[in-house]
Image (cartoon, rainbow, N blue to C red):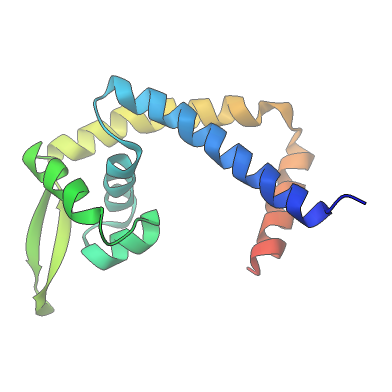
Length: 138
């Protein structure tokens, strides 16, 4: 008997990897990594955040964040600044150059995601969203 739970997890993982590969190819044209784009996109959508908050949102490890941030700073996409509410903490700020890049790449990425999901009907998409939320407990 096949283990359906394992099949679900393998299927989810394969789909996430396929989407990541697709997005990585797009980002390669813009000379940026998936992790770097994750930082830019979260700052674009959420505003200035502490490093730990960004790390949690993009699911990055503590060890890789300094390199990601250093490269984004060097390319003048982001700026580190002292958190006005807690001088011990550092916040990240998206600079105009980073904002411009996100606004250029995001529509292309969303178009790719739309194409990827085009095999599903609108009802199937709603059902999948519902099931994923149910599975994740939210």
